[in-house]
Length: 125
Image 1: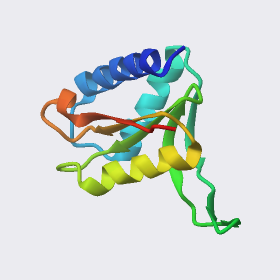
Image 2: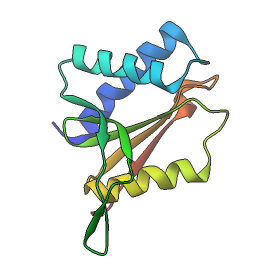
Image 3: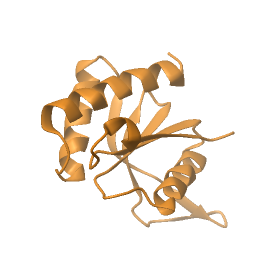
Image 4: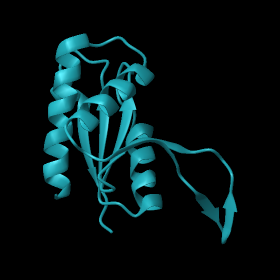
């Protein structure tokens, strides 16, 4: 399955959740619901994955964690904020580089229009 095919299924799950519960919950609630929906769809999903950070060939324990990784190909970073900030996009871009992955989805569930709350971030590996 390609990153685009996975992304399509993820978007469907995001719409399902948003249509059922709407905006205003904590990120952890949306993360749990998205994990549930993606597993139910038969996708391989990992939750709260530690991101190793290496600086000058030394692994540093700094506790970075990704919200979700789907099919070992797509990172999902979940937010429940008023608006995305530039930092949110840069954070996901950095995660993609550290994990050497091509595609990430930044999702803000705290929006009036969920379509505007989903951003695709590509990493040119």
